Image (cartoon, rainbow, N blue to C red; front, side, top):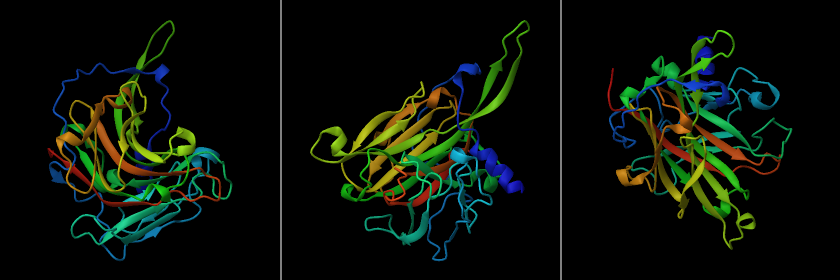
Length: 322
């Protein structure tokens, strides 16, 4: 039971009512962005998918708590204890170790395929975009979150299939995200104002969007990287995806509470020139990294599978240790 208490805590609340919150007055001292892949690898979390016996326990039915309040415990998880089903939305329908596609990391023989059909309530299509979540079990395996003073950073390689193999739907298809938390101050209004403090969890990251030619008016389909989110909580397009195949994505958090977003085609290590943006994401100054996770999205029509996503070597590093 204790491990699920931690996992529920790591998931955190989804909605943020900004109108009721006032942020703590932390001085923000800008520091240099950390390139993801910098520092000491945190061996207890992440995965290389090299074990031929790698297995996922689906524990059907999966959760659809965000839509019908059914969490359908116990949740799915990997046999190696490094991954678990999103408590709020459920796990991808198809999770399987596969041979690494050509052009992957040197020496890699195994990667992880993620795909979904019912991203909402199983067998009850919403016909609206929904998502499933595969979450890295950081907090249980490390016995807590990672303070941003250690400059935690994450890297993953993602294989993008040719554009004509994608689900033909404009919108988000995949995301690489993290769960960060901060302290917020709530002030009551009335004759005697009082204040209290609590943790707020937020979920910024890198989204991969498909843009169908039927919607854009172009004579070709396209894809783009979208950032969530800037200092006002807004999403925006950061760059076009000009080539498919392998991409390297990275996120890093620095001691000033800023999140830094990186991406480049290929599997080479990220460099400073691959930085897409830096923000006090969604307007928050991050204090701790709780976990990272992947979204798989589709139109939830009960007939059309999501795009196939293959990930490899999701890895966490810290620049400083306690």
